[in-house]
Length: 494
Image 1: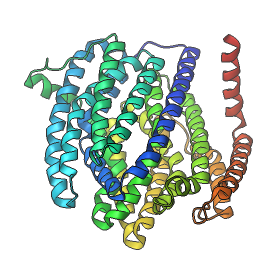
Image 2 (image 1 turned 60 degrees about the vertical axis):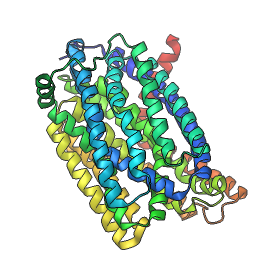
Image 3 (image 1 turned 90 degrees about the vertical axis):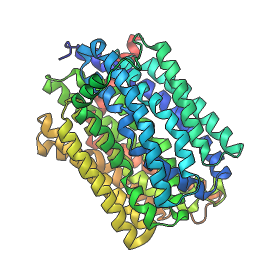
């Protein structure tokens, strides 16, 4: 177990970490939105269908990119320097194996889905896998030292390079290859930056076959969690790729990619900041429970604000920015905005289980989530096409979020009644605000989107945010008062 850390020290580190995550989040969102504007004009709907299937194929080799190896390192903070050489070499070599597996999967996907250039795009993408794997262990080296500033500065630089290459490649006519080229470039650049800023140095080929398989056995549950995490996020594409047309898959993928680009920094920040904090509190159940409650409240309220803004303005902006080209994705984006705060809760719950080392429980939950996502998407698509599929997805997101938090609550000795009351207090304001927006305009002005409609949508969104803020304060004033006190104390110290 890690040495005890003063509560104020941990709170301060977490607060600073969240500040830097927020800076990186705003920067990444701005770049992502600008790049989506250009890509939405430059690329065809069919190219986004290719992106969707390529990312689904990549999800099947997520375990080879070893994000869970870094989590295992963070979980064993007190033995980090001892474990790092072997774990970093394992991650890189496992990533090389993942590249080979991705090539085999690329050939299979090309045969099953008959998507032009899919195999070639995945061949280029496979070059990034070993570097992505090694980068996760280097990220852990900064996380265990609570060096969140350096970690997020590197992420900002990587994001800038990634989006510059992505847009440049698309404008030069790379089409489906643009994302693959950008991914490889970003992974290599991030690796060089992480090496330069880390006190530890990764190893690459120091393991023999026997040691490699020994580490594989040791980390088997951790690695399985990485595969299942990606599968739980992308299993809908495997069934929808055969049930929907190429055009529908293109709209579905565009909506997912736009929402992911806007919200994934929040999910990444949850893992980056809270994993080392929760891991340090193993064996200190009261403090861990308090931190889980505090951060679940903060993340739900933050996620609610972001998603209300997206829900209120996205339909009008999608029409105005792309001239109606992507209007078919409006419903997908709106429904995903409803689901994202529940997805953030599921992410936090998963981080809590992983920090406690409950890997088998975590894996069982992920298997359930993956099967439920595929089933809900398939049932929805069979009943109502693309719109039915996305409605099925939101049902899965809500159920998995609540279920994950309930399981984490059992592990941290949180009573079911208190957990249910917390969920009611946190999510009721969000649901009420979203219902208000849909009552004012069921299609969020997407059908008659003009400049005047943008102003109307902005006023409605502001009203929904005021309702959300007022109800959140009324039902969660204790948390908000504590958060305000923490901020004021930090300002006074400076």
